[in-house]
Length: 148
Image (cartoon, rainbow, N blue to C red):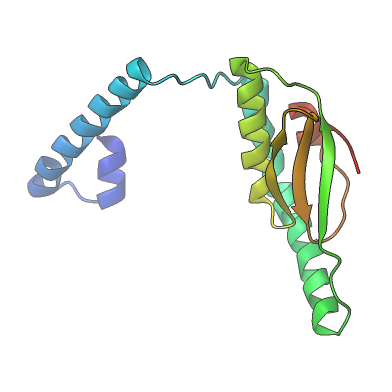
């Protein structure tokens, strides 16, 4: 309910009466989903804490992308790269699922990297970059190895 009040920025009675059913419906759906759906996402606190690195990577990659854009506007075509890196884990353990999901989410926030997916057979993470850059420490901690 606090989230609803923060979103509407009002304590008027009609806003509270409208928000209460919405809050109750979302809580009911959340409990239903947790009990019925096979959610196997179990990140460790250390995996979740890797998010602190993301703002720095966004700033660094923003500078990289702006350089690529400037060179592209000057007539030098960008070297768009499809790359692969080793991925350490290949199980469907809830912790490993969380590492994969967080790696994809955290890395794709940055403007220079878009994670395409993880190839289970070859144990690789596949990603696209506009400017070649090393595998980030965050990706290494979540499971990535050397890139090709």
